[in-house]
Image (cartoon, rainbow, N blue to C red; front, side, top):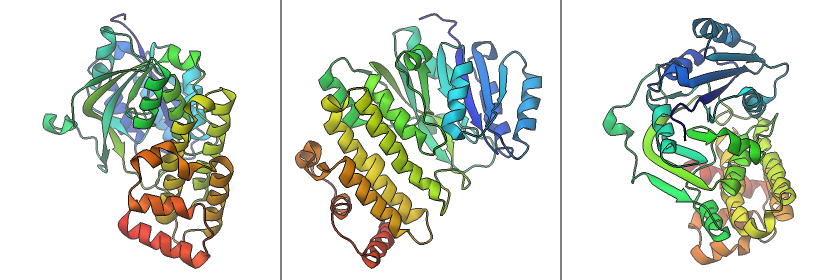
Length: 348
């Protein structure tokens, strides 16, 4: 691995005039040095002053900045895909425009690849509600456990890797070899929320060598205006659309036979339980029709989920088992609302 490898930092931007300067200050302050960076900001048809903020940064750093104004809004997945099409770096780092990173974020992520060949290097993140740019003290950066190398070289390796989900599904807090993404056609669904679920599962199906850093280097901003935390918006149904796209994409790529059991188990958490959590926490009154939609989707796509080999072997926490059973049995609206009230009280 060459010591002068370049990193393309891709930042999708939509109506983040309040936050994007903080993000970009953390990127331009990286200890690795600006000469190693290509900073690609994709304005996804913002309706506030986001683009003006980005133009000011482009003027300040003309040699590092690539500023793209999308012709139409295609949500975060589309903006990331546009950024990837402009990227020329050896490595890709996706950073969300309301988040920020530690000063040594990119230097530490790149460090392992100077010694061995990796497809992906990951670090840990911290949920942060700070409204100002702030960095962690060294003692708070340390995560649990030691740094780890993971090699996924056989079918059995990959089954264990998918099941463990050591790499997590999010696009951020990762450094990814650009050629790896291009060779395996790993891109984001466009015009949909929850795009990371699709993208992250594909990453797990192809990656061969991963390095896991046990440092908290990425600040995930708890933004009440973000997609994940939005209240009473029906775009949350995109989660099921993403699951449908993923289901068919895996079949198209011929991976459903070898890894069907693992991906079925993944659906339990990234689909069924995640959507029930959204219904309980993101709507003033959880919509019963969306629960019925979830039931129909689950029965249609994963009719044998209750008999999954991992569930049979390891069992489930009582609450998770109750929710799994609920997906396959008739439930009246009053019963559903009572279940949602319980979930809101005790969490999932």
